[in-house]
Length: 202
Image (cartoon, rainbow, N blue to C red; front, side, top):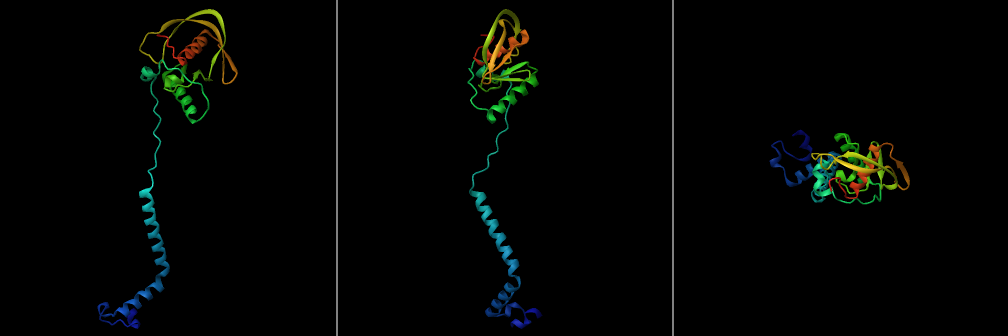
């Protein structure tokens, strides 16, 4: 107790100290520790404010991961749906192209449309080429018969389909693409039919 003797606190202990003596002790302690006390008080106020803000703010919403459905699971809803023209190439459009490419690779398809992945946009991919808002620009008169199947109905038997080839399509605001083989012509015409809501099984 020697430290507090000059403040008038007796050797008997703090229980004998007067109120004035206690006030003097508190004042002296504050003078010696005011810097530390300010830090502690500031931290306490910050934590209180943080707790209040976190309790009243709306929860952060984590975007759900994209689920890529298999074409056969989407068939009941999409196999006869008509696609709409692509108006803008936003994040949704890019995700759709990624989904088409993913399913093509996974299922080893030669060509696939956005309808097959559950997105009614006028887009299809053949090999590494993506065709946006494609339409027939020119079509030949050679009769070609080929067996075609649908990604929507993998368990059904393929169908012998008659097409007129070759075919040239315009896409993406004026670009042209001409089929190089009968198989490509069948694939292009199959995609255009499907994007118009027409299935080979109709």
